[in-house]
Length: 300
Image 1: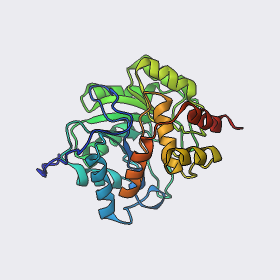
Image 2: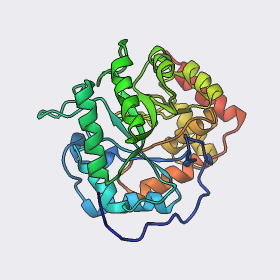
Image 3: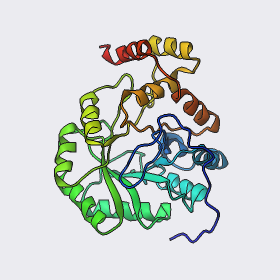
Image 4: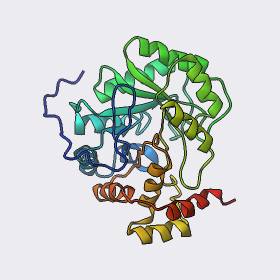
């Protein structure tokens, strides 16, 4: 493991929108950071500006963020290596969450990889590239690049449970999963989080979010701003103008107010954009604002 003795980067504030959430034995900030955009085009290869990528990671931690989301498949390996270069040795309160269950092929595709030996190899690769002896949180990614698919989780999830018992993983979660798969995994072992596609316009997980909130399980929306096609709606622009923010960060504020168990991981490769997201997510939305934004997801 890494023996670097560079001083740990301290946080400069904990006053982030949303406060904290208990995630197993840690309480990370509900406003986190998703590192996928730090890789090159189509999430392959190194970033265009290496120093800028390092600066964003350090700015995230300095702002008080204690939850960073990554995956060995980003790059592949590139993003994990950037995180290690920028932040190792890690602050004790920092939660680094990763995903397994998929890989990258030579064409830049995202084929599944959920056989026991494939999962064990992915865990080892994450440990090596991040410079860790154990992983804080591992999400088992189900389905494929097109979305969730109805399929059993038992074999793959049991493999991760075994690795958890060996001390290589602290906490488990699911990603890109159906509500039925979440329930199946919970029948095998406890999970602390679910990471699915969800935003103002993509609302199929409303019932799942409410169930998980009642159980104390975090819900972590990926593509919180719409993904490769950013959210655009007249209502979003109107509310943003009223609260004095850019439209997309207001979508983050809506997520934080949607449910207390929602943890945000918006991604960016720009320090300026990171700060804009933090500021916008802090917007206080009135009941009328929320009602107007809710209607976006209700549209056919």
